[in-house]
Length: 156
Image (tube, rainbow, N blue to C red; front, top):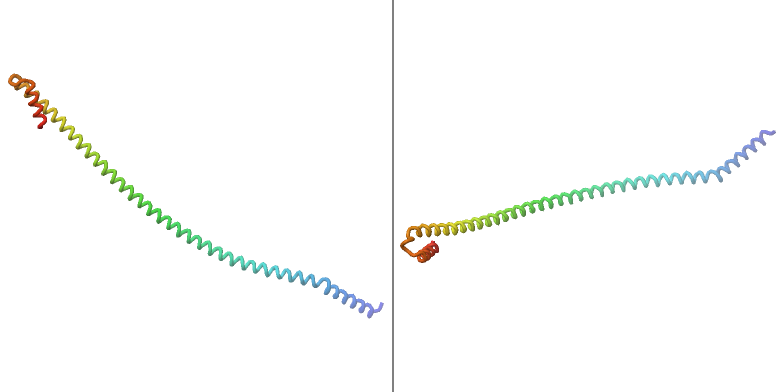
Protein backbone atom coordinates (compact mmCIF):
# COMPACT_ATOMS: atom_id res chain seq x y z
CA UNK A 1 0.00 0.00 0.00
CA UNK A 2 1.04 3.32 -0.92
CA UNK A 3 0.91 6.09 1.62
CA UNK A 4 -0.14 8.58 -1.01
CA UNK A 5 -3.03 6.43 -2.13
CA UNK A 6 -4.05 5.89 1.47
CA UNK A 7 -3.79 9.60 2.16
CA UNK A 8 -5.81 10.41 -0.95
CA UNK A 9 -8.38 7.75 -0.03
CA UNK A 10 -8.59 9.13 3.48
CA UNK A 11 -8.88 12.67 2.11
CA UNK A 12 -11.68 11.56 -0.24
CA UNK A 13 -13.43 9.70 2.60
CA UNK A 14 -13.03 12.77 4.81
CA UNK A 15 -14.38 15.01 2.04
CA UNK A 16 -17.31 12.63 1.54
CA UNK A 17 -17.99 12.62 5.25
CA UNK A 18 -17.92 16.42 5.31
CA UNK A 19 -20.23 16.52 2.30
CA UNK A 20 -22.67 14.06 3.93
CA UNK A 21 -22.55 16.00 7.18
CA UNK A 22 -23.00 19.35 5.38
CA UNK A 23 -25.91 18.14 3.22
CA UNK A 24 -27.70 15.54 5.32
CA UNK A 25 -26.96 16.14 9.00
CA UNK A 26 -26.14 19.86 9.38
CA UNK A 27 -29.37 21.38 7.93
CA UNK A 28 -31.77 19.37 10.15
CA UNK A 29 -29.48 20.01 13.11
CA UNK A 30 -29.51 23.78 12.42
CA UNK A 31 -33.28 23.67 11.90
CA UNK A 32 -33.71 21.90 15.26
CA UNK A 33 -31.43 24.42 16.96
CA UNK A 34 -33.27 27.37 15.39
CA UNK A 35 -36.64 25.84 16.28
CA UNK A 36 -35.47 25.37 19.87
CA UNK A 37 -34.20 28.97 20.00
CA UNK A 38 -37.55 30.16 18.63
CA UNK A 39 -39.46 28.13 21.24
CA UNK A 40 -37.24 29.53 23.98
CA UNK A 41 -37.81 33.07 22.68
CA UNK A 42 -41.58 32.45 22.52
CA UNK A 43 -41.51 31.04 26.05
CA UNK A 44 -39.66 34.10 27.32
CA UNK A 45 -42.09 36.39 25.49
CA UNK A 46 -45.03 34.43 26.94
CA UNK A 47 -43.47 34.75 30.41
CA UNK A 48 -43.16 38.52 29.94
CA UNK A 49 -46.76 38.72 28.73
CA UNK A 50 -47.93 36.64 31.66
CA UNK A 51 -46.03 38.92 34.06
CA UNK A 52 -47.75 41.93 32.50
CA UNK A 53 -51.11 40.14 32.61
CA UNK A 54 -50.51 39.21 36.24
CA UNK A 55 -49.67 42.81 37.08
CA UNK A 56 -52.82 43.99 35.29
CA UNK A 57 -54.89 41.32 37.05
CA UNK A 58 -53.49 42.34 40.43
CA UNK A 59 -54.26 45.98 39.64
CA UNK A 60 -57.78 45.01 38.60
CA UNK A 61 -58.22 42.93 41.77
CA UNK A 62 -57.06 45.86 43.89
CA UNK A 63 -59.47 48.16 42.08
CA UNK A 64 -62.35 45.71 42.60
CA UNK A 65 -61.39 45.42 46.27
CA UNK A 66 -61.38 49.22 46.63
CA UNK A 67 -64.80 49.38 45.00
CA UNK A 68 -66.08 46.58 47.22
CA UNK A 69 -64.77 48.32 50.33
CA UNK A 70 -66.36 51.58 49.23
CA UNK A 71 -69.68 49.82 48.61
CA UNK A 72 -69.41 48.03 51.94
CA UNK A 73 -68.80 51.35 53.71
CA UNK A 74 -71.73 52.87 51.85
CA UNK A 75 -73.98 49.95 52.83
CA UNK A 76 -72.83 50.24 56.44
CA UNK A 77 -73.58 53.97 56.39
CA UNK A 78 -77.02 53.31 54.93
CA UNK A 79 -77.65 50.63 57.56
CA UNK A 80 -76.62 53.03 60.33
CA UNK A 81 -78.94 55.70 58.92
CA UNK A 82 -81.79 53.16 58.67
CA UNK A 83 -81.09 52.00 62.23
CA UNK A 84 -81.31 55.59 63.44
CA UNK A 85 -84.57 56.05 61.53
CA UNK A 86 -86.02 52.87 63.03
CA UNK A 87 -84.99 53.95 66.53
CA UNK A 88 -86.50 57.42 66.03
CA UNK A 89 -89.68 55.88 64.62
CA UNK A 90 -89.90 53.46 67.55
CA UNK A 91 -89.39 56.35 70.00
CA UNK A 92 -92.11 58.38 68.28
CA UNK A 93 -94.47 55.40 68.32
CA UNK A 94 -93.69 54.77 72.00
CA UNK A 95 -94.38 58.43 72.86
CA UNK A 96 -97.63 58.33 70.88
CA UNK A 97 -98.67 55.07 72.59
CA UNK A 98 -97.80 56.52 76.01
CA UNK A 99 -99.85 59.63 75.23
CA UNK A 100 -102.77 57.50 74.04
CA UNK A 101 -102.58 55.35 77.18
CA UNK A 102 -102.38 58.47 79.36
CA UNK A 103 -105.42 59.99 77.63
CA UNK A 104 -107.31 56.70 77.98
CA UNK A 105 -106.35 56.47 81.67
CA UNK A 106 -107.45 60.08 82.23
CA UNK A 107 -110.77 59.31 80.55
CA UNK A 108 -111.22 56.19 82.69
CA UNK A 109 -110.39 58.19 85.81
CA UNK A 110 -112.87 60.90 84.84
CA UNK A 111 -115.53 58.29 84.11
CA UNK A 112 -114.87 56.54 87.42
CA UNK A 113 -115.00 59.88 89.24
CA UNK A 114 -118.29 60.72 87.52
CA UNK A 115 -119.72 57.30 88.43
CA UNK A 116 -118.52 57.72 92.01
CA UNK A 117 -120.14 61.19 92.21
CA UNK A 118 -123.42 59.82 90.83
CA UNK A 119 -123.34 56.91 93.25
CA UNK A 120 -122.53 59.30 96.09
CA UNK A 121 -125.43 61.56 95.05
CA UNK A 122 -127.76 58.58 95.02
CA UNK A 123 -126.55 57.45 98.44
CA UNK A 124 -126.76 60.97 99.87
CA UNK A 125 -130.24 61.29 98.43
CA UNK A 126 -131.23 57.95 99.87
CA UNK A 127 -129.80 58.88 103.27
CA UNK A 128 -131.46 62.27 103.16
CA UNK A 129 -134.76 60.63 102.29
CA UNK A 130 -134.36 58.06 105.03
CA UNK A 131 -133.43 60.73 107.57
CA UNK A 132 -136.15 63.11 106.54
CA UNK A 133 -138.66 60.29 106.46
CA UNK A 134 -137.88 59.40 110.02
CA UNK A 135 -138.06 63.01 111.17
CA UNK A 136 -141.22 64.02 109.50
CA UNK A 137 -142.97 60.72 109.01
CA UNK A 138 -145.91 61.83 110.98
CA UNK A 139 -146.15 65.43 109.79
CA UNK A 140 -146.10 65.05 105.96
CA UNK A 141 -147.74 62.42 103.93
CA UNK A 142 -145.39 59.80 102.39
CA UNK A 143 -146.09 60.55 98.72
CA UNK A 144 -145.61 64.28 99.09
CA UNK A 145 -142.48 63.70 101.09
CA UNK A 146 -141.05 61.32 98.45
CA UNK A 147 -141.75 63.84 95.67
CA UNK A 148 -140.06 66.53 97.69
CA UNK A 149 -136.99 64.39 98.31
CA UNK A 150 -136.78 63.32 94.63
CA UNK A 151 -136.85 66.95 93.69
CA UNK A 152 -134.12 67.66 96.23
CA UNK A 153 -132.00 64.73 94.93
CA UNK A 154 -132.35 66.03 91.39
CA UNK A 155 -131.07 69.43 92.53
CA UNK A 156 -128.07 67.86 94.22
